Length: 246
Image (cartoon, rainbow, N blue to C red; front, side, top):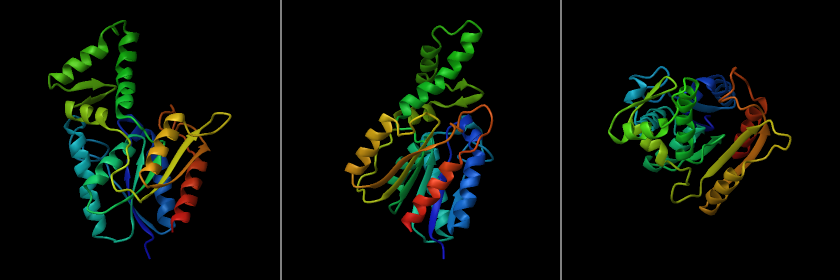
């Protein structure tokens, strides 16, 4: 018997590559526990069709809907969307378009697309700073996007549609709550706890009617470390939370 149907939504740009191993480890653990897990590469990412420049926020939402339709041909088990970093933003927005309600698993969720996009643009600024040409880079990028032009940042060509969609995204609960959320963060700080921004956003999901299990575990920032790293406590905490669900 399949205990649940889970769609995994990966992070943005290079963070996807950094997190491949952790996503694979967790997917295998979920499968061994009786869950059907579908991992997809969004348009222009990983092994998917198209180039990164072809991607848009709306196209990625359509990818989630396509994944949902396929998964529903395999099982009718309770649905959950599992997002990592910016994948959490996508999960929350795409859930509104699904014909049924979904539960959520959030790993180190990005709560503000605007902040996430600004951090990504800083990669371009940092590169230009090394060459002594950093002045006005941010304004130049915004002008290019406003003119309908793609921008190149850290080896990724980003379309205006994708940049604008990401920047406008917020990790807000879909209307008509009553679902379940597993919200997990990893940290190597002395006192491991949820960030203040996460605590505020968790409260908003709870106020919207969602039952939220939120916790912080000890582990590296594997989505951005220079070497590929594991966070075993995040894996075990996720499995424990899913066990409580079923």
